[in-house]
Length: 484
Image (cartoon, rainbow, N blue to C red; front, side):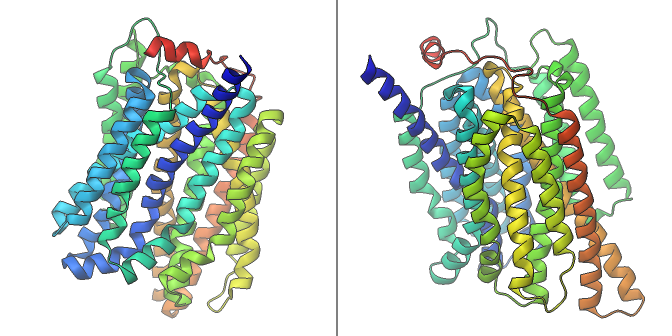
């Protein structure tokens, strides 16, 4: 009996290692490609607009299919969908590396995003189904730390591979890693799924949510090209709003909806999702435009610019698991409120940058921002997942990650619009290019700080103890036995 308990305990952590291994690969792909874009452009001879879609196509399909991936994982088995997503990701990575033109590469990247959208919600729902509440925060902290590590070293890895081996290998390396991940998943992850009496796919819900998220994310990606007040932008936003309204109408009438709208009556679930959107809105734009500052104003190389963010990311890696343990004991509200407040302060410090500021001027902002992000990400995830019954963990995870993806796209679009408008006004008034960029960057950072402080208020008001709205998880052995 003791040996069996020990084996189950070890299996939990091997399961976490398996999903973290695959998570590292898909999160690495979010940033590793950016540094290789000049090499891809030169080698394939593709236009700038096509090059943008090498990045945007992945982000779009990733966001649009996230909720679908979560539902499929709950319905057909989390391990099964995780493995299928990993297989799609690995094979489409091979196609990316073999691409000889823009169209082929963009299509392969879109398919790669679909694979990631199947995998990511499954990683969270597998952790939720595997770990009891008292250990879940710690497991989610490790999950968040691995994610941060991948995002941090992406620019470094991308720079080294593209400079010394070739941009194709950024994608080729995913193939053996993907198949190792598949083998590990089949060996150590127990199957789990929604074991409700009746199950069906809910095509109307999937269709309406897909249309809504596609319209919103596509518009945010292309807003700078169309213009915020153009008929195309306004029409697509209207389509997104209609899609959301149709989704709510369809799900409220479904006998077996894909997403239980009653979750939106849970203040903790709503608060965690709103914070997920706001924190990525505030920070993704910062990463993007501070990187531009480093490369265009300070003339850092892409690899050096990526390395500059390491203090922030290392703090996230080490502090996130600790924050997870504290969220298990104390709940998430205080940690999220403190974390978003620190994030806002870090953005105010970033807003003091000047054209010739050194790394040491940026370091305090990087340290405070890293601590703030670490205190937010794990407790936020723990709060959202604790509000969702374990049987519905895939859909809950899909919704949370969709909010994060939309927030990231919104952050780049909104911060870009603020920066561009201020920059244009300054240039018109006679400022130099550098002065105009810095004025726009400062304005965007101040807005980002305001968003972060707003998210701190949301966390303080809406997030409650994990005990509220939490459904006790069913014993994993029972779930596995029923799924077999």
